[in-house]
Length: 135
Image (cartoon, rainbow, N blue to C red):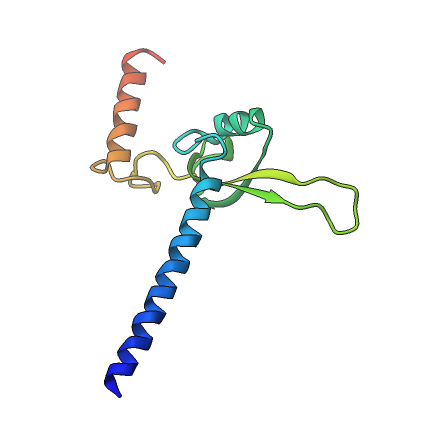
């Protein structure tokens, strides 16, 4: 009896793995279709998305230290929205974006990245070069 159970479990595991690979493969094609805006300020990302003929839609935002145009895009995913049934409308293509609106580097009064993290080091370096260039 134990031997039959192993066969069934092996077949089930193989089917689940195959389905997961099929889903993963289909998501890759959609993810690469739009402009790569990760790491950009939302205002710049909106321009790039609009230039590609899509509409930018904020799906999530973390933090409240910055206004949305100054937030950093941490993730972007393209989706197509079908028109309402029985309408003469056409499908629209949107780019869902996730925003990080925390400060570049944390302080005693504001949340943000650790100064020791890669993001924090980049923010500290950018602030230092901005102050040394007089701007």
